[in-house]
Length: 91
Image 1 (tube, rainbow, N blue to C red):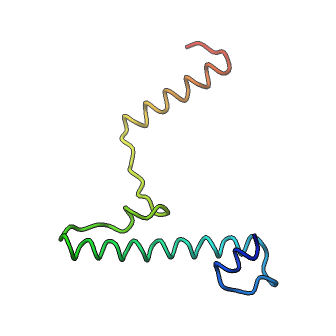
Image 2: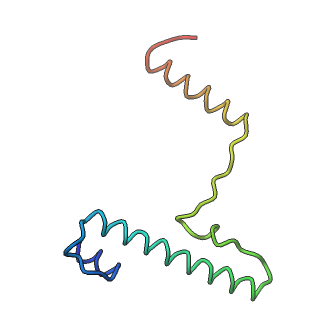
């Protein structure tokens, strides 16, 4: 496993810890995905004229949709109902 990670990163593994190799390999994978996403979005824009945001196709950079106040209130009610059910409390 350590040799695999060192091969992905392309460094000498001996002075590094497993955790540092894992973080470096993850960073490399993220960077490679981002490069591919930019290339795909550029090619699609050149061929079709449609604009594609690279973050839409990169699995590591998903846009978080803001929740509406109604959705937050519903989640809060459901959460408190679960807590009350767990502890046997009735409203």
